View 1: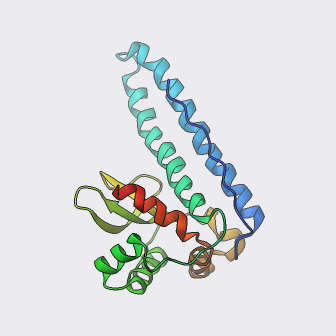
View 2: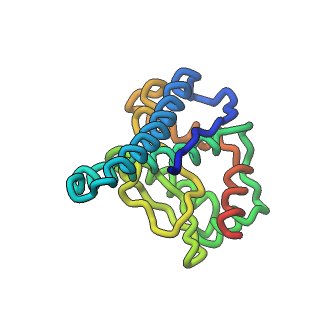
Length: 199
């Protein structure tokens, strides 16, 4: 049976985000990994009698998509904050692709920040690479899984669930959290993720 293992992230001291917030956030990530594994085990057991357990299989399969995507979304999030903060490389293929798509890197950045700050509800602001059309897209994902784009790779994911920032910023500090998130990013990790997606 497939099982998942939590990844380890080397996170520096982050601007605006306390060690306590990061500690609790990583515990939440570990919970997604554990829950995904537990659901896979339970589904394997239930499928031994699919007729009797059909309804429960359906409900747990729905829950698995939430837990699995919670796990993968957080891996992108924490990896992007790992190591040390670096500025975007203006000569990188990602920078060039963003500029080509949105007219300028700053134009994309302001649009992305605005989407994250103004979209209602809990979820994620995401920069995707559409492997079919070989284009970049930005969208909002509700919760962990509603609105994920088929055949797209998450290049950058900004967690906008309140657990990500409320303890340090309060609910009114959402925009400050977004600014600090971008100040903390290790763009070399994000640029490498894009290189792997386009390869």
